[in-house]
Length: 193
Image (tube, rainbow, N blue to C red; front, top):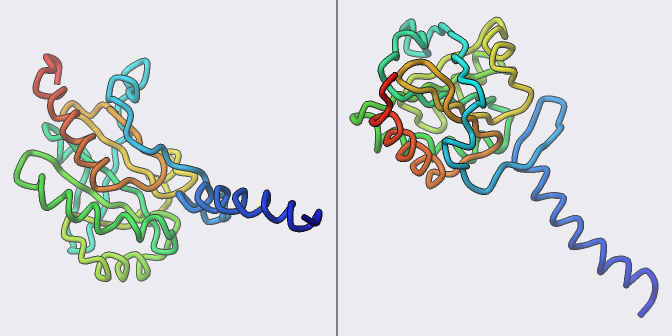
């Protein structure tokens, strides 16, 4: 075996692993970061000290005003996305499916387009047939408040407005359903929520 064949044999698996690693999340600067394989239990993902989720107000693409305060009393799933983000495109149908399953069960979903244009974000929502409330962070303030440096990113916010779990990178429908189910159970037993 030649030296180049041996190196190619070592290099090919490395390229595959690197591609999987880099394609799980994206930023405008094309920095990519791997997503966890499954959601961690809520107790592990919650901040050590309870943290109130930053408030936000958006104009949804169907013309309604929506704020985090409007959803107090419900478990809220906030997904930050961008039309140019490959993993965001891959997970969009997963969110629509999970929304369909939980929309009549006290769980609110919100999609917020960041680091994008409003026109492209609207096309993204139409292309994937998203029916849960979606809007555009026109000023970038929500992106800064939630410290979004790559997409996709999903936050789960409790009935009391506290951050319960943050998922960095692409999330599957199975992971969404598992996280929501676990967090709903916790919220039902929570005395302070």
